[in-house]
Image (cartoon, rainbow, N blue to C red; front, side):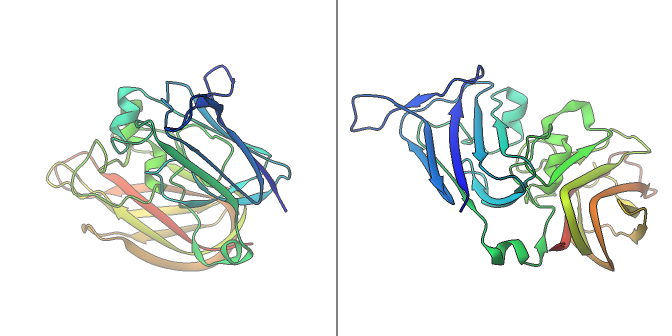
Length: 277
């Protein structure tokens, strides 16, 4: 059994309060449970810098989380006991997500421990709709050596959020990883523990003629090995098998651009398939 504490905090770390329609009093927005916890309120306004904090009593655990109605439920790995999701209400942050995320007064959040079957499954272990630009305590986490104009619609985390819309660029749902024309652009997916991978899928942004695309890309693995793939100008995910290896991170780099006039290739989504090792 894993004890889970779920809290909503203000920017100074104090627990926020909410109220339900048929109640006269406000209640602290905190809940605790064994292997499952949820938190609901009908009157809470999120503000810049608010935090959703998840605390567990044992490190190295897998959780299934949904911190907002517009965030897909996802499996995450916590190497430590605390995961802190910071809510940003800036105009740029809002551009990169659905209009209603954290914007209403009615909210429902839930966190539970993952089942043995979920932890052992063959799946895309790069997927994490809850990932953010800065590491928040939960894996997988995407980061890069460049993100166009430090704009949230081009952050590395967009490439593992599970959104495949790629026929335009910029604001949600067309967020992507943008490389700002940088020749040595590289994006890394950290898993936080060993995973055994054997397949990758690339979804390239296809906003032509604004966009360009890559004809060749590479994956560098934490074990020092590398795979090279030849990609095409098409909107669908492009799948490639490779020799299975156990790694803790993968870097997408050595990106060779097509001869098209546009200088703007971008990655909409990357998927890495395998099992926990």
